View (cartoon, rainbow, N blue to C red):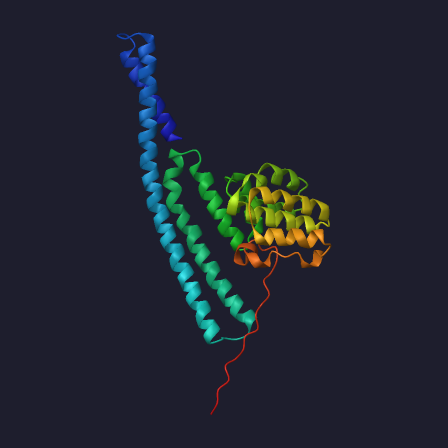
Length: 265
């Protein structure tokens, strides 16, 4: 917001100073140039500051991921309780890491007054973290204040609409979900076709997966299409998408059995 205000003030100041000695057309050109120069200069400074904050967040996220992976590896080699207990321990550790990430987003606050979209961009990141924490009420409150453009945020929005029985889900997918191509198209189409199957709209699911072939080439989507075409609805599965699918929290992954090591004396 301040970026626009300062750029306008600088342009009007130049216009007021030069108005009496120059033709009107020249004054307008000068004002436009000053506005653009100020706006670009401030935007570049903001971009530099934003990149610094983003680098800190990326480093923090990497640290959290490495800690979780180390914890998971230790559990695999030396089980600590039942699979359910170990999953709970990992969840607690993950939630603690997500709380750190959410708190760290406050580093962006000083930039809010300089950009119209900065707060919405940060809200989008916060919304994704809250979704991972399963704080769905907070996610629903924050969604109207986010930028829903990338594949992840669009799919999360679809998930919440599905869970809330929102009748606008189909329209939202047609408007937002269908525009992705390549790898970005996989998860929106996978999620939406799954939702259609759950609603017993098999023909619509087949049509959606047929359309997906124009947007992306993916073996999992193609296999699901073939299963539906052959009437094998129960064999429809997005499980091969692994964590990308389970992160949407529409289904729980099957827990592998943990085998205790046998010791010989």
